[in-house]
Picture 1 (cartoon, one colour):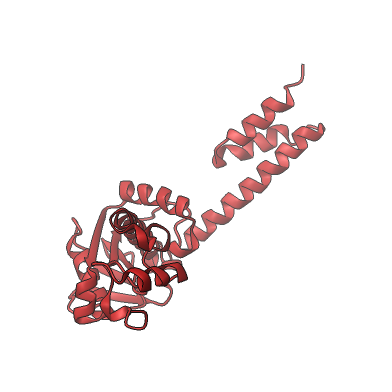
Picture 2: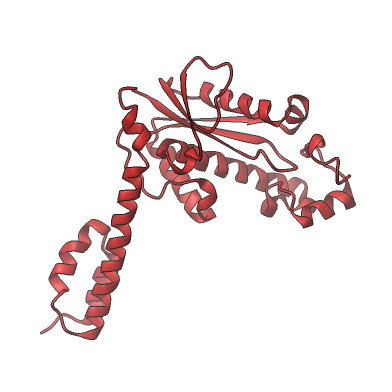
Length: 252
């Protein structure tokens, strides 16, 4: 008796990507329309998985180029542009030949995917460091210097000292470790992409907590950026303690 179509469909849908080739081979000659549809869906999923594996391989170009360094650290920041909240930097050392899929510039990922990847990165990274520069510090020394400060702090928080820093576009002053600035590095280096995700999720969670303290500004949704609703609230209520005074002179 032929295996039920619904059972075949369920097997293909539940299969891990590495299990799909054998299943597609097993059911590829089945002429039933329902099975053909399930097989075609499985082929598309396998093709998408193989494209992602290839993209992940390409994302390790710089890590392979500098493979002689034992501990390569990616660094990125989040929050240079908002009107409120800190700038946050992430520093991540991934294991050699890291095979975590879907890492990318955090801005290109959904919130759900960032949260999922954050947990995977925190579990599998060799070391992770986080640095912050508060709104008052940003006002005091300007956003660029505050960003550098947060990046230095992130590096200092690493449990393992890196031998090489891969940075998203910048060269950080006052650091003796060799640095390689990469334009749009969060989309070109798996290490920088991982740092981007860690920094983004960390800052977003922090802004959600600030939202419970200062609910009138909508920080949970706007993350401190200058949306029209945020600007309207700023003009109505005035600034709160986490607003960057040097950023809001046009609004209040």
